[in-house]
Length: 569
Ligand code: C2O
Ligand code: CU
Image (tube, rainbow, N blue to C red; front, side, top):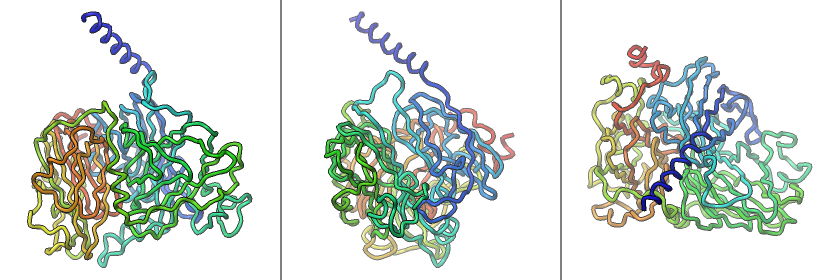
């Protein structure tokens, strides 16, 4: 017994040493600026990094420390970058959320993000100030296993797809429209982009013939040429897919090929095979693709819009088997996206995701339940989204500094409620459509196990309830279950406590609820919000603070604004 014990301990010790020896700091100097670009072949301005759009892909190994010196070269706007899916254990000031974890970086200034990527996975980064994500401020962040570690699946090669949506209307105009009365909705995106490339108003055949034919404006325009996926026959590829869309829920299919889902939001899942995959804003997946089809032809990859009446054409590209020419058009029509309102299809997919055997299990019980009713309301005539009748407005002083230094007058001291009026009818527009705005936060005791029930409801329009992908900063949560209509006492008996998936983003379906559980074990102040950019802009989020007294030394430049500006120099 002793022998085994000590042998085991040595193996563990050795592997720890090994990991720390392999880990390193990776430095990046980034400049954010507006630039001309043609994401879908029409020229507009986008927010780029070091002249690139999307921003540079970060590739690191688990255990590495990333150091990103971000210089704001915008002339008149602040900027921050959030590292979506990275939990920022011990570095809550590096989360990159304006007004929450830090002050927006002023034009001409530089901020140093320094944090550890502690776990392998497919992640991305994006602006988190105003609607800068919609302006194109995003890129991929991929963390490989540490040296000497292995993924629990095998693959020969890797392909990376970062999905986004694109409007021809500029972001400032979108923001103003959303905050105006009468309200002006941004409409559906003109294009879906794959790695920042789409082709507006361009026929299928025209896209891929060589030389390009017809009206396609991308003739000779490398910026919007389709991202072709080149593969060798009879290999297995890991396809990393992340969605940073502002609005669109997407569905991806590859003609003639099944995809085996193995990772979701940086966590391993029980592998399962699909013909098509739904992906909501804020989510990421890895799927395995085996190139076992006839190699003398190519295959369509299609990405279409779901959950909203699609007015956006499918994004198309091709899976190009070597040595077949990339300009050979696949013989049959591209896969068709399931009907936008086929929610059963979406639910079937979402509910087939389980944690890989051996993954961490949730605590059996929780200490606190927070039920969050999602409604669309008005505040003084302006359309807003509210959570338990509070529409979030962010304060000018970041919460993290306010809480750390006890600055009580920088935000609403009253916490929003843990529940909503049980007589509220979620099937109808709100009877009293007036809501309130506020900057109050939920204070959660350190190490509390929290259940969050996200409760969907009807919008201001009759018979409409929308999908919302909710994303939590600083943690993963277990998705314990989904249900129809109102969550009621006793529904917790249906929770999956055996193998619920760990994720950082989970969707609520129309008129339904979704139950999450997380342990508040990461001192800091964390946003939890709908990942649809216009919805967040309209107040659809809450803020969780936990154990801020345990937060270490906050870098001074994170707090050089608002009330903390004087406090902290
Ligand atoms: Cu990817 Cu708070 O967002
Ligand atoms: Cu939403």
